[in-house]
Image 1 (cartoon, rainbow, N blue to C red):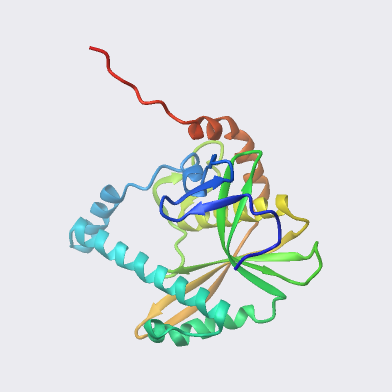
Image 2 (cartoon, rainbow, N blue to C red):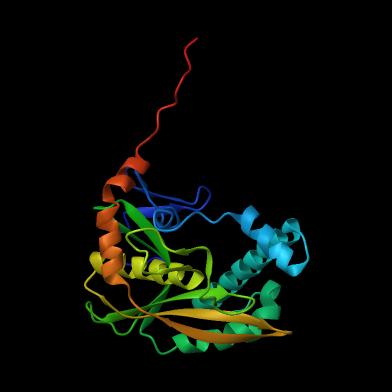
Length: 253
């Protein structure tokens, strides 16, 4: 949905999965930004550890992860289409019950938006909000941000690999929950800087398969505003360095 909440100076190239402004300058995504705070996810090593505990192979574990990601994307598409049209596509008929049930909690908002690209020209970062909900039509009204997540076993708070995030955020556990909380706070902070709106609530809309049906849990998230502000300032020089075009090095013989 096209919005008029602020000037849309930055867009997401869905093929490259990169953000650019109208002048062609690239902006750093949250995924790349979070690599400063946490080690990059090593799928082969971690899948091998999981495989040993489950008595299977790393390839089978990674295939299971890929299917879970595909199923999550399908659910996201179905939820977005229903929010914008009030219709369930025939290809998503098997998701009709959960889509309608999950969508009920958004009916009382003044207006909801999906896939809102937020950005900071100062720090050259950008991201895409999954679901942005405004509480009224006032230009400075409060907002909520939610993120749909399809998890086989619900929300995980256990660290994976490295127990804590990198310094100076080593007071936060290196867990799935922490990453999502930081991501949602990152988006909320950027939206606040672009508008007069203020964040009132962040929550994860967790959808869990339960046999042939689904269970919906709402997980509240604290707004890590100070952590986001500090992280952006702390890594500001590194962000700009990493976004600089790299010249190809030619070997001389």
